[in-house]
Image (tube, rainbow, N blue to C red):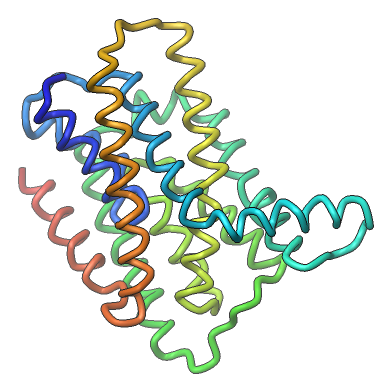
Length: 264
């Protein structure tokens, strides 16, 4: 990988990981459309670690509270403070974890084509638009998560394994569909990303261990820094602008992208 490819792919990962537009789709598409060589598994690992470090840093105060309340709830065998949210993040990760282990090979072989990405970009983009429309008409959006909410969002998150779906997009969509507010849906979606990205990076590390590659350490370090910084500022501005711009710009972007991909 050269300098330009490293910068572009790191920015793509950092900007798209937490926006409802699918980072996996963009990381597959950019090399295909640019004729660049595959970036390699080691690069995928470090940019995922970069985005993981960004979201952990952004939510560091909440994460500390969740960890403390989680362990207190285990000791006292009852809900303590934010322990329900902590349990929700863990339980909501189980469906996508199981689906990833069961269908990883099938997805790698059958669902990484441009056509699949195009259709999933369109379908789940339209679903996001429908959920956003419902949310704007709902005058009593909820801010508290129920166990049913956690289960539904967790199950829907498993669909993010399909390239083009967008993990953040489908979890935010799920939250809006069941009546959660945009801010609650987004926060839960982003907190859910922490164990998911961690599991994904661990699986890639295992594959990397079994298929060792020559590491270009300067480019890997650059990729980590660019993805981490761009992901952090993406989260900051997305959350600040959510109430102002809403989700429809991302719906329009997905429709345009899906149509262009089908045309190509």
